[in-house]
Image (cartoon, rainbow, N blue to C red; front, side, top):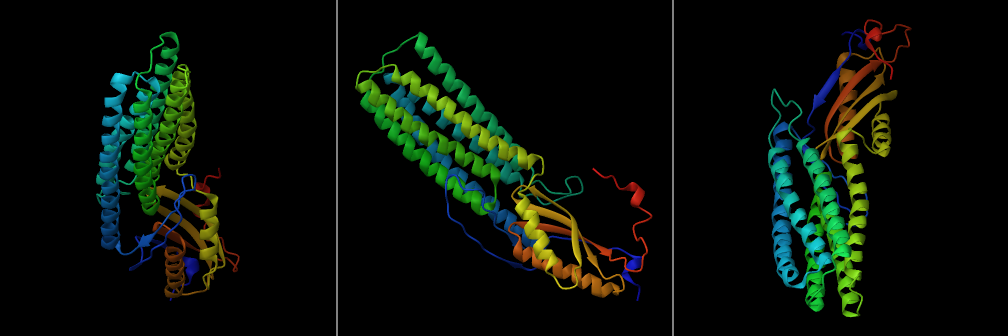
Length: 351
């Protein structure tokens, strides 16, 4: 039997043969709640297919809700001339349009890895999220432009009671679409789907602003309509900042530091592990991938060190939500005084 000091081990897998379910409270400003499942490669792919199908179903339902809402609002805007209602209608149409690239992304993400896309197609969800950010930005610009134009070209708002009714319809439709997308996004761990839901959520609040604007018109303050339009535009910018920052984190492979802390605690609690270091974690679509080094006794035989690594992986799959892939490297402890990384140390770049 060879001592561990003569070798190193890399373990890469899609998980063990079991799964877990977790749930959390749905709240509009809550942080992303990640769930996790794990199994062998074929089982994990089946889970990904089911997850994507659930996401697509949520998109289909919310898309239908928003389209019906937008059509009704547009029908009322044409005779009313309310720029605030126009802004709200534009938001709803843009929100419905963002469902299409995300729908495509969720469909493509179901494809298994191949020799060209060795990590699979999970990253396409984040690309769709970027598109959503751009659409949110465009809707804010259009709303601001139309509102400013209304100051220089005043136009009477007709049928303010109908505008108020359209605003209520917009609020209810967007809240329903937002709830469907955000709750499903949190369940699947899809930041892009959550971003799309927050876009709909922003539109629900702007619908309330349109309602206030129509009440102002009824009370004899017609300028309240373009003012509300500008307020909507500025509000969307704040939503854009929040969603854009989260998408930046995903594209830059950033994670919440608490995830690393949890991994370190979980792996370090396994019997036989002397140290855990060089942890790397990233999101790929709505799943986590991790790699790390663990220090073990250099005098252990191969099979014993391998068992420790398997115990580490097994515990991590249980303890870390949405963990899909783990790569573990075994480092001998070095109590003999031998540098077991001497041959490769000059290739290591300290950043």
